[in-house]
Length: 232
Ligand code: PGA
Image 1 (tube, helix red, strand yellow):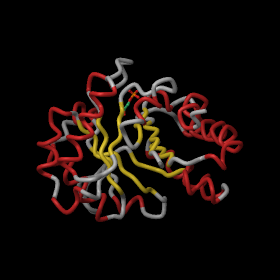
Image 2 (cartoon, helix red, strand yellow):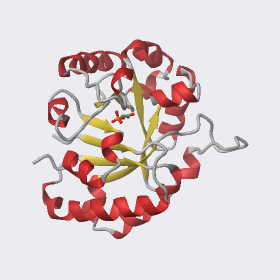
Image 3 (cartoon, rainbow, N blue to C red):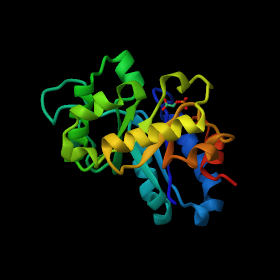
């Protein structure tokens, strides 16, 4: 089964570091190209998008069949007078396939509400981008309730328990399985990912119960991330 392996770099890396990461990751990837089953999704900070989009275009078509780009956030508004916001239209021609929306860090530091997240979902779908909606169990239902019904099944969702993000405190697999069931009740038969201290040594256990993983810290180093992608 194809899984989604998402690298969320958050606000890390300048352009030089993006280039170095990519070069090393590609070197590690080429020998495994024929075994690559999963969809690898890279979510760099906005400035890195252009470089990665161009790099993908110049690589073998097989590689771009398996590696996609995501943004870490998306404006809740369409194109227009919204200073500082990056909307779906701004991303055209960059090959952005996914948008993380409602990451807990956005909710916490930028005070995003469930309604903001719902508006981002709408903007993503209307612009042909698949939203990856992040949730914790405590607000899963409240979040799903404000997303327009017709868009629910167009989402990928990511269970991101607050206690596990960036802490090294892993959530038990059975707890993740329970959250997957709840997410499917609210959103329908959508892919459900898990995020929170995913590492090469625990990724397999999560992939038994989810359709993919959202990886922060362990995605920053290309070697560690490739161990997660090419689970021998
Ligand atoms: P982490 O971050 O892998 O560093 O815990 C996950 C996330 O925030 O999506």
